[in-house]
Amino acid sequence: MHKIDLLPDIQTLSNSVELSVLRRPEWLKVRAPGGESYTHIKSMMRSKKLHTVCEEAHCPNIGECWHHGTATFMILGDTCTRSCGFCAIKTGKSEIINEDEPFEVADAIHQMGISHAVITSVNRDQLWDQGSTIWARTIIEVKKLNPNVRVEILIPDFKGDIECLQRVLDAKPDVLNHNIETVPRLYKTVRPQAKYDRSLFVLEYSKNAGFLTKTGIMVGIGEKTEEVFDVMKDIRERNVDIMTIGQYLQPSKEHLPVDRFVTPDEFAEYKRYGIVDLGFRHVESGPLVRSSYRADKQV
Image 1 (spheres, rainbow, N blue to C red):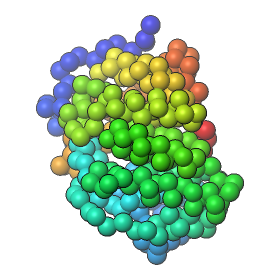
Image 2 (tube, one colour; image 1 turned 90 degrees about the vertical axis):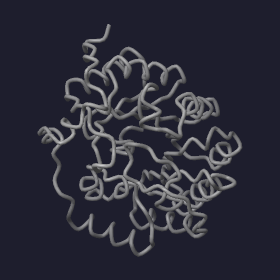
Image 3 (cartoon, rainbow, N blue to C red; image 1 turned 135 degrees about the vertical axis):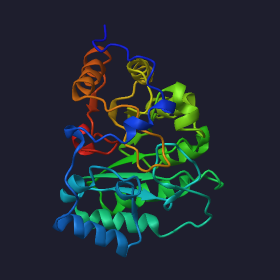
Image 4 (cartoon, rainbow, N blue to C red; image 1 turned 180 degrees about the vertical axis):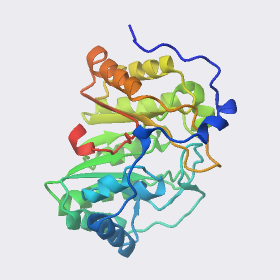
């Protein structure tokens, strides 16, 4: 049995604006980014015209991660074809492809000297291959220049196109991550161009292909706790190995409001339930957890 009581159904996206402007609790406060490593990584990214999801998505852990010399590379540009209600990355369409990006990412990872590289991308639904060719080339080039680096990829759903997904898998990443993001009931509001079952399919297909799989959701965006448990069950039924759960934070006034600030105790219960009751290999659950937060230790 779950230890967390079901939240009252009075906390909806429509009436939670007041909560979104409340002062963050102590457990959500972080230091402003800075320091030598942070400055070095930022300078390197600018010089190579590379993007990181750390910056584009306003990640609260950017100071900590960059201080330790880790960053999540975002390929295929900084403009996404989708308009998710939670995401700070700008929306639009671009036909521009940087053919040198795979080499530039590989070189940046080499310069950073990291052992676990995380790569993600925007959605490029308008492209004939949805960006999967650049995805595959990036993985291959990173491994070629950095043979001892473990490559974790956080991919889009490729609209469920198996050919695109297989093209990426054939490049042999070490960890396949695709985020579920939220509960099915909220998809039309939170992820209007995505489908819950399609995201589950991406994870199941990748796991059946023999890959270490990973996914994540955010909480505090309007879901009920019982819905979180149900999503965790659905994910584990696809034999996904690793799951991350973190607090949603509103990146701007134009984005969905925060419904509530989930307590550390509730995050701890999600972790316990996922590992003890469901048998996940690892569950990273906490207020500041993001998909790539301490990714090397998760694996």
